[in-house]
Structure formats: structure tokens, C-alpha cells
Amino acid sequence: MAQANLVNDRLTIDTSWDNIVIVDNFQSIRGGYTLDTTGFTPTFIRAGHPIIEETATGILKPMPVSNATTFAALPAGHTYAGVAIHSDFTKRPMAGITVRGTVNHIAFTNASAAGKEGYYSYTPILAAIKAALPLVDFRGDR
Image (tube, rainbow, N blue to C red):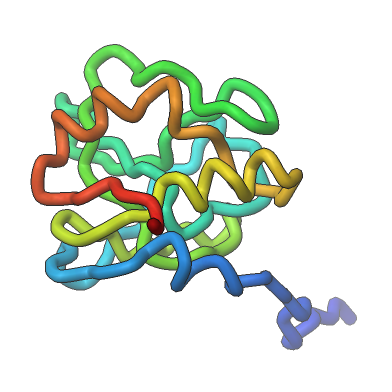
């Protein structure tokens, strides 16, 4: 007789940087969104990770990465849609997405430099994402 395991695997994720990276969330996409993670290989989508939209379909995805520390270029036919509010596993891609608030992009970049998994450098995309999301204030701590 076939048997099924009805107990989910125990999942643990370090969310200690979430409140450091997402300083304020004044407005978000109502109800959140399930992201299309096809081809996205990192284990985590961290708070502060840019979310992009495929303009032809309206499908939201995590911003692609080029290596363990850097975001890739924005794919053709995509725009910036917002920023992930909380950290979660890529295999469970349910995301709260801020469209108006404050993101400490320097802390996100510094976590990347410190070798924390799932964090990337904002440097190559900062000017473009600031222009695309004018209601999100990308500002580091003083």
C-alpha cells in the first residue's frame, strides 16, 4: 500500500535583517503576490529584493541575479514593480511587495558583502530602480 508523508519538512529562515532593510512600508500590493520563480536558483528571496513585472503578461518575478553577490541586468520586456517586504524561501514564493516606503539598500548591499546568502549589491541597479519606483525611498542609515 502506498503511503504519503503528511508532515511538512521543517523550514528555518533567518529574518533578522528584514526590519533593518525594510524601514517603512506605507503602501503595498494588496494581498501580496505569488511570484514566478522559474529559472531563479537562489534558496531565498530576501526582504529588500527587487520585484519585476513582465510587461506583456503582468507576471511578477524576483529580480534575476548574475552571481552570488550581484543583481543581473533588468531583462528586456520587464519593469520594476516593487520590493519584497519579507524574506521567504524561493520554493514558497509568496511575497508582500512594497510600492511606497523606505528601503535601506545599503544594509542589503552590506549583508551581501558580509557573505549572507540571498543578499546582493544594489550598486548596478540603484539609479534605474530609483527612477522606476519614485515612491520608494532608497536610503541608508546615517
